[in-house]
Length: 166
Length: 158
Image 1 (cartoon, rainbow over the protein chains, first blue to last red):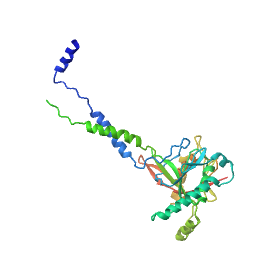
Image 2: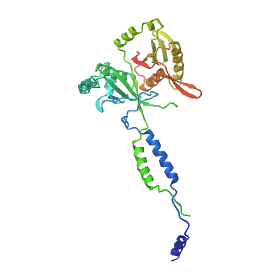
Image 3: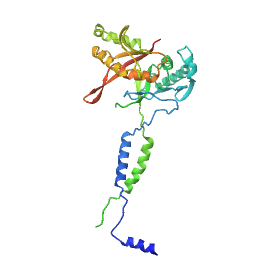
Image 4: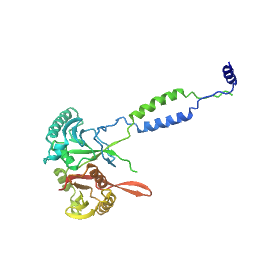
């Protein structure tokens, strides 16, 4: 009874009405949403999140194009997400050409040309993007680049992470 | 005495839905591309034919070689500068200033060949490419980009 009395007494106090102050929360959310909308890109992330692929950073401002992509991690080589071969054997061999990759790239080139026939404004440019792990040696990159150029992919782009000027 | 507040509930609903959605889809790492110029004989011949006066000027065949002893900057067979390494790696600021001097001497030159040993990590190569492509110069407290030699081809040195 006592508590009841107290409660009613407080309620009976009348004029005091307690609102939760939402203003600061609304401010916070508004800022957050505006910031995220500003950074929003409809393309989404085209960076593959492979475990052993850490791209090097560069100041380059050039936007990447959607092309055929070769991914070179420290252990494997992937073409369009498909594992082609492992890098150990390639590093040991003296050959510049990577036969397995050449075969798959030839197929990609054939496919690219075939599709270019059906689209009026597109021609097969032989453009390719190499996403390399930052620790791979130049010898490996050179072999991949040589193989690409042998398979009619002469326009090579290196994929890097964009670094802001600080 | 009656307080008239705007009813924020619908707005809050909107924000509560939008904020997590945008947070999840946010992209904080942006991919960029570095273009490599493979030497194409037809293009080179066409350029040489199109610009005869350029041939009378002093030609710059800039090569930047990454080796154990440091970074060698050369014009054809003539060695210009050797940038010795510093304890933390290669001395990229020194390379940058050497290349800026070269650019001021040959303002029309825009191509360079980067030669590296087979064991040079990709990361180092990209850093040297960045330094060769453009320089960051501080003017009035602001950093500005200056294009140096953007047409880069790659090669191996034994």
